[in-house]
Length: 162
Image (cartoon, rainbow, N blue to C red; front, top):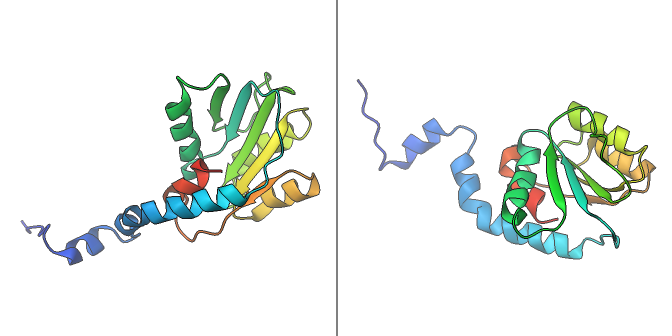
């Protein structure tokens, strides 16, 4: 049996080919970058919101999960994360629908967001580009666009701070 030498950094390079350990070490700096970018983003004045629906899959939904958990006892608005193709029937004019997709091309999220376009809900997009950004631009929907080269699960700060 081979011994794993945890004191040697080369061990981690071998066991972590995607570099997630480095991404975790960079997280404080990435959080600051996301925080600054969110502060510069001009968000419309969305009044009368009592529900927030975050559409996302995989890594793009993790930020919504964390925000939901952090605010569950503090927020008066219901916050839901949807990982599905179908928009819930309760979406109305008092709902903020947030389309969150790192690539902007996630099939399930695009399907649900397209349905949201036919509702009176307020809308917002968080992405690096793709079809989601195209939809936002075509429909004059505010889009928080970020550039962060990583796996979507490592872009967690960009899904939390906008």
